[in-house]
Image 1 (cartoon, rainbow, N blue to C red):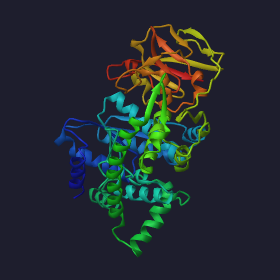
Image 2 (image 1 turned 90 degrees about the horizontal axis):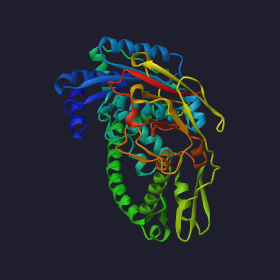
Image 3 (image 1 turned 30 degrees about the vertical axis):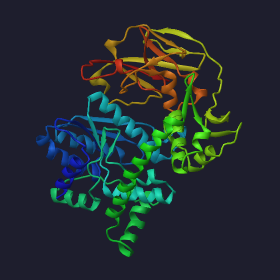
Image 4 (image 1 turned 90 degrees about the vertical axis):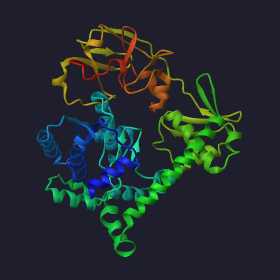
Length: 455
């Protein structure tokens, strides 16, 4: 029964094609164990290439045991395994995120980079219908709008797929029991300090008992309907946004008169699209922020976050550019000695290694870069950012201006001059805090790797 639902979901949302290379996000827990078992069952029929990736958050005492369990499962099924880990707590502090948000962000960064490395066409995660219902209630309690309540999508960015999204967790439990499949239990799932756990362990059982036994599929259906309607409104909103946006000297402006001619629902979407263009995402942006910008008076400003201030002048809203002092430097580096950039008080080390010795890769754009050694020419040039700098980030379809990439990544204006640019034969290979260049990435032909790491 569950295998049938699994295939129906793949077909309904067009999540998979014959011959796809699928990277399975595998924690060793209940949902991801079922996901792996179902893909193994489908592998021969769809001619799939399977590999698994495990991100160790290192937040729990049994995290190392979970990782060992994952390694044993990978060995049992003879599947390629990629393991990564990061300092989730440190990342959360630095980026002012809660632990769950920080872990999710680092986990997806890891999955995307591994997928690029192994040329995977899909990344499969174990989100279920139950997860979708829990997320709906969490966001409802936080006052989310239609986009947030749309909850968890079956497909994201064309590469992340969620084939279990139409299956309840209770059915997954029954499936694993029938197949006698072992899985790990995350003890933090029972900690009532977390809102999601209180919803899972207290609120949903209460609703099922006292109001509606089928509350999970009902909430999932509502979430799906909201997602479909939100997608339509977003498409209309983007069309309106393009009419109300102006660009001068590589700077974006939003026309206030046009904005106020729109229905409030579309005006809010235009503002959100504008912020997303400037910041790269909408993290930390509240309903109050959007309303404040809609009501912004002539000559006034609104602070959205560190290094991001919107200003209104002459009927236009735009990003107020700070003018950090320009730091000029240029150094040639042989990749062997320690690189010291005194102007920034930064140090880097380089290390050449065989690809097999480098596994698993611990990706972190804020600290290190992994590059194909044979594509590099030494000495490399390390210099300050220059006007007109362009390159093609890992996974991007083409070259973009460095200024635009930094803006999309949400790097504050005040920080952009503190990001050294690494070049080989005049071509950018890496900028601290950004992905490596697509042209110098590691792929299946790579035999030797050069790692640059900030001390």
